[in-house]
Image 1 (spheres, helix red, strand yellow):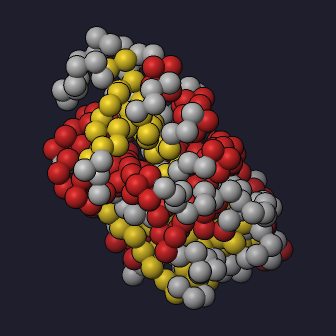
Image 2 (cartoon, helix red, strand yellow):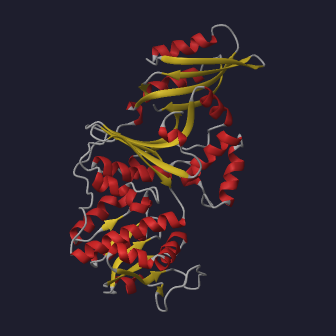
Image 3 (cartoon, helix red, strand yellow):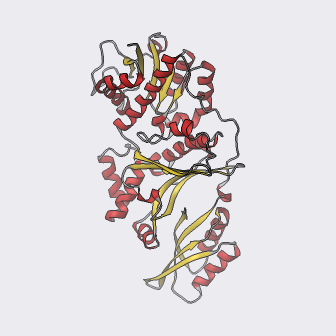
Length: 427
């Protein structure tokens, strides 16, 4: 049986997971790939780093040039993360005639088109299933299985940390800070969780999915991102009383003329499939006129889920090498549709206010909404005591720009004590 050697760049959590899974599942992988896949080299900056997996003698190096110039290395697996030096290594690997498998969402969201073009020019494969959803197969379907479908929407829960926090807040009533601390202790988040909490991690992922789904270049900088830090237990309770759950959603939609690309908390009806996704699980929901509706669900993070997605890509690349071919053409965007400004996005809204508990207060709010063309679908009012009332409004669909203007004006009313929350509602 022919042997194909790979190199792993970066022996962090995922990189070591790839080495361990390759060792433990070598026979199974060989049977499915049609060749033996062997770890030939591994790049690690600190050679004295304590590893949880044993490597063959001479495999470990801190010199990229040794791997780039090694003619026996056919596939480079990049698990370094970040943009540089990962970008340089990937480009140089492709130029050296090696195919690449990466899990690096930051790199793809920032430099995807450059990398796709380099892979095409080199006649080599660039695979990246683990970059979104880890164990959830979504990149492959978008690149292959769904290419005949005119997708109009891809929407999902693509960050396990934020979903875990919101699930615990809803089910146990615990405060945000306490759950975040527990998530750190359990290894569900990084030491600096800002990318998760502020929606940037999810924004990078939806940029990748939008590029594939709509065959139009979407970069991380194009995606509107809003995090979960302002969500309170009271918001969650009131949403539930109205028949909704609050989730951090990554959303992209296309109408043939422009693309919406956004990440933010949103209310979902309890019966929506995504509303039932709890804990650290991820799910991605797709819609199109030919496809109808479908959802991909599974573990969206972790060492072994990511490692198995990477090695599945490696097996695909190995089969391509055996057949002397390149896989499906890398998805260089054939066009660039404009990204719709958030002010032009149309959706429903959930608005929570604290008003003076006096006659006419609510009518002043309604007057401003009407003046801005915002129609109200539901109203809930309750007393807060001390001369204040809490009002929750759910609107019909309206433009984001109109709602933002109306909310700003409502905040300036003498009867308004506080604009407590403003969330979008996705049906």
